[in-house]
Length: 471
Image 1 (cartoon, rainbow, N blue to C red):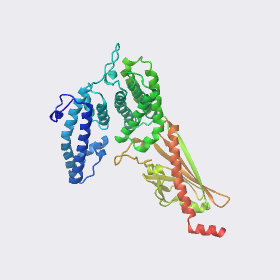
Image 2: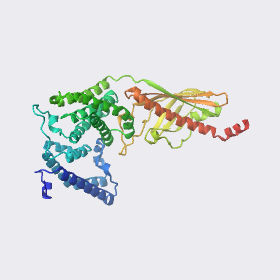
Image 3: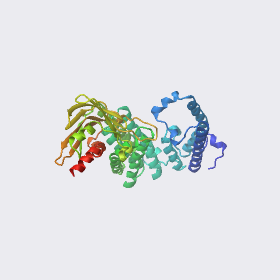
Image 4: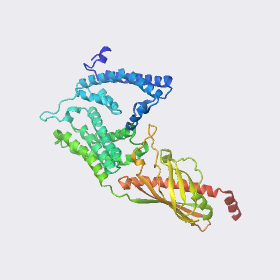
C-alpha cells in the first residue's frame, strides 16, 4: 500500500511493515542528530543514546535543574513534539494493519519496551493475526499471538520481559529481598511463560522453545541494566544461576504444551504462574531466615620475623591500583589502613575504594594477633552502569563484614606466616551459590592486602641488609 507525505500525519488508514520500519529508523536518526546538534553546539552539552532513558528515581530531579539545563530540556521537548505525533500516528496505522488492539499504542511511550514493540510491528504481516483453530474458542493470548514462529517469539518476549522486570523490581526494589523468589522463581517463570506463549498455536522444536526462554531472561537482564535497577557485574554473577533455570522453564513448558489440552485456559494458567513468584517473594520478606556467618582464611609466608611484620599489619601504606578484573569491574578493593591509637579499644580504618571499614580493636597481642570487630561497612561494590550512578538495595546491608583477624606465626626459617581471616554474612539466597562468589571476592581482597604487606616488609632496606649478612 502506498502512503503520501500528508497521510503520514493523519491517524486514519494503514501502513505496511516495510515503510513503517524505514520511516521509523529515518525519523529516529534525524531526531537524534538534531538533539545532538542542539545540545552540543547551542548548549555545549554532551548527548548520547542513553540520554533518552532516565532512571525512574532520577525523574524527580527535573524540578531541580539549573536554568541552562531547564532551557535545554524545554528545547528538546519542542523538537520532539512533531516526532512524537508522527510516531503515534504510524503506530496506530500499523496496529490497524496488523489487526491488533489500538490501545497498544501506549507501548510507544514505554522506555526500552518501545524498541521491541517497534521491531514486532516491523515484522508482523499486514494481514494481522490469523484465526485460531476451528472448534476451539480462542483465548486472549491466542488472539494476539501470531501463528508464525518469528511473530509468536516476538510477542512472547514483548509480554514476558516486562512481566519479569516487574517481578524483579517488586522483589528487589519494593521488598528489598534477594532470595529464592527473585533468583529462582523469576528466571524459571519467565522462561516457562516465554516458551508457553511461543508454542500457544502449535508445537515448536525443543531447541526453539529453549532459545526463546533463554532470550527472554537475557533481555530481562538488559532491562534491569537499562532501567538502572542493577549493574553489569551483578547481572554477570546471576547468569550462571538464571540461564539454566530459564532453560529448565522452557523445557517444562515444551513438555506441557505438547499435550495441547490447556489452550483455552492459557491466559489464566500463565497469570497464576506469574502471581506465584511475588507470593514467594513476599513470604520470604515476612519470614526472613537468619543469616549465617561465614569465614574466609588466607595465608602467605613472609621472609621476615613477626616483629618486623606487625607494624605493616596494624597500618599499611597506599596500595597500587588493582589489576584484577573483578576490582576493575566495580568490586570494592582495599587502598590503605590507618590506626587511631594503640591497644585494645583503638580504632583501625581500612579504607576501600567505596569507603572505610571502621574496626575497633578487640585483641592486641603484639606481635602475634590483631583481632577487630567491624562497626561500619562501606558498599561492597560500585556498579558498572550506563548511568552516572545507581544504588541498588543489595549495596547496603546484604554483604556485611562482622570482624577480622591477622595471625602472625613464626616459621623455623625465621620468617612469618601471616594469616588473614574475615567473618562475614550476606542476605543473598540460595546461600551456597552466592557464597562461591563472596568467598572468592574476599579471598582476592585478602591476597591484595597480604601481598602488599609482604612487599613492604621484604623491601625494607634494613631487612635486605640483615638478609645479606645472614647469607
